[in-house]
Image (cartoon, rainbow, N blue to C red):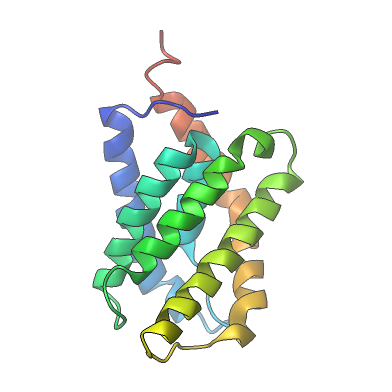
Length: 168
């Protein structure tokens, strides 16, 4: 289930990623939620991967992660690597994810947990402290799964609308 993304799709994806990064930093990160905050950027990456495939998930994840890295205190590239791997893994699950309503949520939960664990592992390897830690993992996964029904249909509709092969 890999769709081709044309120039209009790349521009739309770049705008959506920038919007998600701004909303993440200005709104979602400041919400007084217990156990961390939802990660809209990661949910967007996973939605792209589920609708456009593993390559799109990898590219979007890496670019979005690097963009988030530029505004954070940890070394640049950590989230780029984690989001890219999560997007690729979710994209590999894409053919099966379209068959049910529950499966994309399970994929998002697993990919979010994997990305967060990879992030904590990389920070531990380079001897950097991580905010939150493993205690925040269940709530972060829950928040991201709760965002999925709002983000995934919009991304799927935009992908279908911008797919150059679908217009022929």
